Image (tube, rainbow, N blue to C red):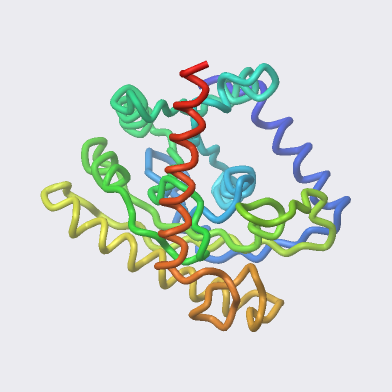
Amino acid sequence: MRDFTYPPVILTAKTLFKALGMKFQMSGTEHIPRTGGAILAANHIGYVDFVFDGFAAQPSGRLVRFMAKKEAFDHKISGPIMRSLHHISVDREHGQASYDQAVEYARNGEIVGIFPEATISRSFEIKELKTGAVRMAAEAGVPLIPMVTWGTQLLKTKDHPSDLKGRGKTIGLHVGEPLDVTGEDPVAETARLREAMAALLDKAIADYPLSPEGQWWAPARHGGTAPTPEQAKKLDEEELIARAARRAAKNAE
């Protein structure tokens, strides 16, 4: 793929992050291959995760093609940018097309970034994962790489005020060893992926320069005040009900 937009976007982002005094903690970046395709499966804790996740591939000199919601591609400003970066539009009502495109990308040597939790985790723990990441990697015949991002929830996430300036913030990017998957038992292999991501999350929190104790942005299991996974699941269900009600009211107008 010809990338006229991606390199200057990365350079601009690096310049902005430096100006804002942002710091990065990285580990395991050597696990991202310098050549060949892969599926990069990352956790999802904030609206700007994909902006930072791709930085984990920079030491390997790679660009990541992220799977993102169709709405980002429909927007008059972000849409042309997303397409120029060769990201993949995901229409949840017609997901097969984006799935097939991701497999094709990976087969052709691209690194495809995916959020297997599908939605932002309000508990900041690893939610139950969809099996798509495992199935894509198996079908494309490429490694599945677990990854965890930490600190992006401080910039913009659900239920909390945004702080997009990010002045002085630290972002953790932690990559795990590639998993070889066959797709013969996608549920079991997805469970392996979730275990690997959970271990990376514990590392990210332990390495972070701020204590999680009593912090809204930290999991309850680590002493934070974020909702437990059970509480977060209930909030997600309530959000879906409210969204469906708004959609029905709009259609009735």
